[in-house]
Amino acid sequence: MTSVLPYLSLGIRLFVGGYFVYAAIPKIVEPLAFATSIGNYGLLPNGMINAVALVLPWLELLCALGLMIGWRIKLNAALCAAMLAVFTTAVAYAVIMGLKIDCGCFGSSGGDEVGWLKVGKNTLMLIGLILVYRYPTSPLTFDGRSKGAEGCRGRSPTVRYGSGTA
Image (spheres, rainbow, N blue to C red):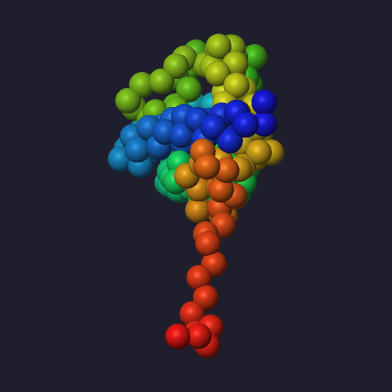
């Protein structure tokens, strides 16, 4: 099982990172549509909606790219998990309150209507991110925690110069 974990972690990193990139781009391009989606939930004061609509997609994009390229995996997994927990809570709130709104996940490009299925999808991604946080060792990382097919633990061979011999 432990030999599968690095590759499972890589797969989750790439899937969730790709999902977050795919979700962030339309929100960056059309922040007004995203602000409208945020406002539909009725959870934030009006004065905060535009700021969140401008900042959150960039945070999503940066964390997603960090996950995908394997840079600061634990930090990016934790940040994505925190965002996903907030998103999931907001969707669950909307379902409980009976709101018939788009989740706002992909800006005006469309998204799922809020529902328990969306909560379930988000929860599965959240569980995956917890796994990535717990087991960040995977192929293709910049963290020094890489473990590829050869069993390399992210350490490059030490090359010493000036050993005094010719």
